[in-house]
Image 1 (cartoon, rainbow, N blue to C red):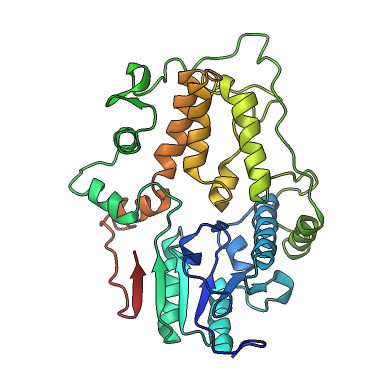
Image 2: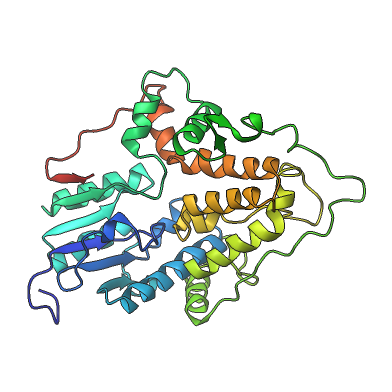
Length: 353
């Protein structure tokens, strides 16, 4: 029984660092009187794949802001910060919290990586805590729906999937045919710059770190001093409000110029007309549907040409329609060249669909 609780903990809701979405399936039946959120900063998640300091800072800053938001909503949040965590592994930390808190059930939205999903299943099984693994509604296609689409196909082509998703969602479609009469505008979107270079490029929005983010960046510098990169100019969006501002600025200022030169480069211009929204989408501060609909709205109101909007929508709809790493893990084959087979889940795992 946790301090201040009148009854035992019902659900422990594990929120991973890239699941910072208030509309997440993890919170569908959340009851602050009975349930608790668990968020974990773990050194191993930054060293499993050697990470840039800014990437780590982005995760920690956004996680800490999200925890504060949940607390303001009245949620009970158990937040394990780097400085408080004696374990390098997220899974080891989860294991100890299950022992300490004794929840009746562990709830988590399916992770983006098989490594974490299998590890969480293993920890729950070892501690005999029923696991509710819920579907990630962030993506436009569920795992099962993607499997149905991929079933029987000898090859998985992004273009084929993209057209399927256009038809399924109705995005940039008119009467069953693609808007403008073509599925893509690659020819229009592969222009080089003239000798004079790009026209004045609108500045990217910058979000000065507040006290919460500054503390997160200090932790990164302290714990990961040997990791590559610098935090001196960190200005990424770490809250949903900031991410929405970044989206609005892109649609208004850079989307109209994005398509024609989307593959071009120019010395001294690292970003040009690109959106820089991937991090906000990855953390789930933004929903891909609202990003796509904002771009299409610009086309419909004649604020951006079709070629530019289609080129941008393709990147979101094609890759945000389904989890790319899951596609590779399930269909690319393993090191021996054999197709990977999904392992049967432990009997105590409940799939909340």
